[in-house]
Length: 454
Image 1 (cartoon, rainbow, N blue to C red):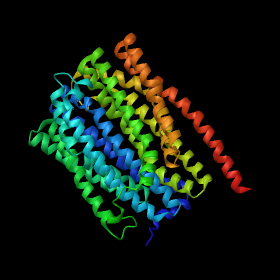
Image 2 (cartoon, rainbow, N blue to C red):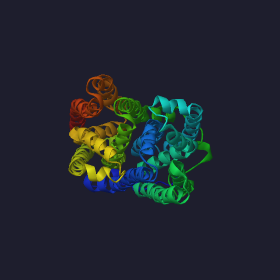
Image 3 (cartoon, rainbow, N blue to C red):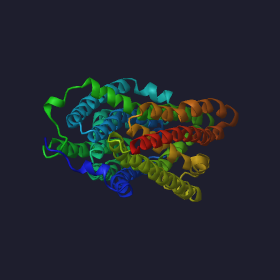
């Protein structure tokens, strides 16, 4: 079997240069993805208005749940692929590809079918009002119809990165983004399709990018490519994918619950304007989170491969460098938004009340925003070395242990302000928890390295 050469450098090249090489395409792709989400909101905010922006915010839990299932497969498979390459288990890598296709097809269809049947009751439960429900409904029907495409696109991109092709993964993302931007303008402003135009643009752009990914994995020149015999669910592969992918799944599923609670509380204490404000805050601040996620995608194959190969010193080095860049990025993002909150929010809307409410909420969330970088890197790091349990603990700590109880208590006493301040408080508590676990793991690495040296 012909072997791909690119992944071999993961165990030999300079860590700093390797991190830049692997992470930069992913960062650019993730940043671009975030920007096209922002652009969608800008198109909707200026062409339709506050009610449509609030309706879009109501769909976030469903969108997050869709991403959760996509990452259950994509992140799990990508992580295992890196480890298998480090262990030189080449047959398993093609089983992973085949299982990604089968699992994404099954889960994608089931997810869409169930949600389409109960869509309106779900949206109302999530906090939709009579004004925002039509917008949320129209958007989600189209998104759910293309859900299998989204899952497959995410899964194949993860495999491209993990086998040492971050540039190809970036090209797939950029292709989707550029097409999405063009179609958004065409469908919303030229065809007058309102919020449905934005949904159509998203699905069509991802479908075209997926077609290019399928072409790559159909080529026998590619080390990992489609082979009929591997399109059968393998019990051990599926178990490993779910074991590793469970952490990001729980993180996104927990985020879904959190968004529901936040939207419902904001709707009760601040109305549709407050819900729309949270949607804008999410879009803006997530730009910097996406940069960090891109960075961790670059870290993942390096740490996974070297951990599988027993090169613990290199694993520790890439972890330290990634944490430094992530914390610096989130700190810079905090400063930018803190200095120019009104100017940034004005990009989405001309409604003065919405601008005022959003700027206030954004400043509360920014209070401990720089700490998120450290925790995000730690969660992905534990995923990348196959320690799913530790990753799961960190994933659910912020949401279930700290944030949900705070959301059930503080809004009753402080109203809208009580909703906003739950986020920085839970970020601080989760940061302290992460430091404790990471210090314990660092000691284990040092011991393993000492054992190898002796």
